[in-house]
Length: 211
Image (cartoon, rainbow, N blue to C red; front, side, top):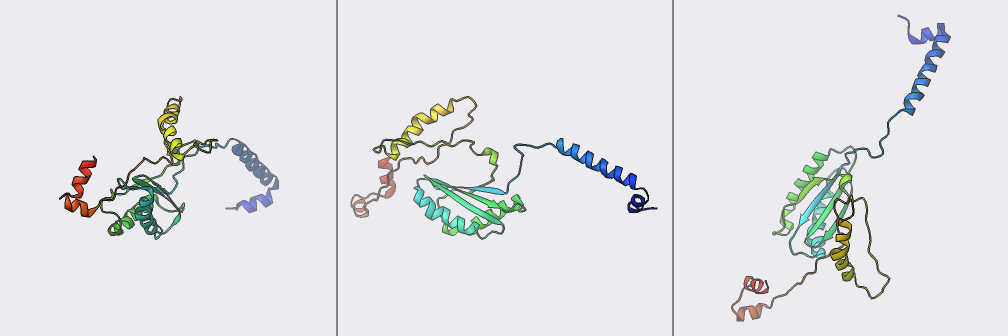
């Protein structure tokens, strides 16, 4: 059976017609090739949610986020790790290489967090580990500023919580409004152990009296 090269040599006109047909059909197919502006891509990104009730952002960062970040950095295939500390909670976003299996990555994160349970706060809630879908992220971030130099940051946070949040929630097409940078006011109390002993009170009695 003659090969394609032998046929092309014996019949050059046929070879040229075949090559021309491939070019023409290729150009037509290229023009009609479908392109998606928003393709559904499964990015290897995992988010870890950590909760410690009553803890300030500084405590979340030093006692929760830092140990967990150090443990996650030991996992193979990690490209970047970013974290955010808030009042009573924190989140860590872990991006892996594109060839990394996302399910295996989630299991590795869970295993490494379990290994450092002894250095984490005892009253911390179990870590919430889930895949991160870019489609779930906010599509628009707005920042509040003031031209008045006497405006405090707390005033802007209260304004965003009490007024701006309701305004944007009523806009047609808005599914959810998420506030970033807002810190719930908190009061930290250091008890005088000597006075508690004199009054025959425990820390639980003090907490109950404050409540």
